[in-house]
Amino acid sequence: MTCLESCRAAREADLEAYVARIRTCRICRDTPLGARLPHEPRPVLRVSTTARLLVASQAPGLRVHATGLPFNDPSGDRLRAWMGVTRETFYDEALIAIVPMGFCFPGYSPAKADLPPRPECREAWHDELFNLMPQIECILAIGLYAQAYHFARLGRPLRRGASLAEIVAAQSPADARPRLIALPHPSWRNNGWIKRNPWFESDVLPGLRQAVVEGTT
Image 1 (cartoon, rainbow, N blue to C red):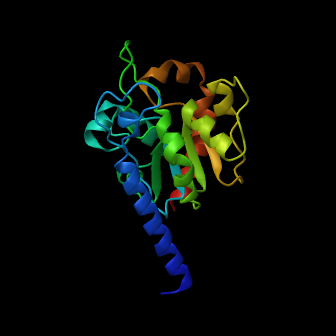
Image 2 (tube, rainbow, N blue to C red):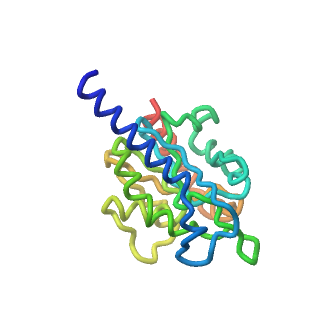
């Protein structure tokens, strides 16, 4: 085994061990920062040491919690259409990593809307997780929680009070590494935002698809 192969194997082992710890995490159930998670945790993420494209999302919904497969819902269908990829490519961990800001379904609000991502995940796990994946070249930051975290983590903090439209419109340069592409959540709840901002589909999606091609080939 060459030195390069040995280093790669060691990094894969480190990442695998770290993810195994994440998958058994019960912080939000046993020692939460706020209200206790109202159900058993089921952390959902997909990572590897080879994926150069990262889908940085919010938190699993109820259907994802039940299946363990991220974006296994109509939102995922729309996201894959935006990206121009098949389900097979989207779920190929060697090509695309998927890491939500909250690993577990956070539950519903009294109005039956999904609660925000649990903060315990970010505080306990995210920084080191991304240290173990330095090969990531492009991040699709979906929603304000993921955008705030990743832009700040990479030394490009968002302007305080910036709207989603401002964040999505102000994409990072194509030669920035890692490149950050901000996206609205593909949920049907954002249909109104998408209709009010037609430039998203005409101006942002072509560049997104090109970045996805470059990140998966």
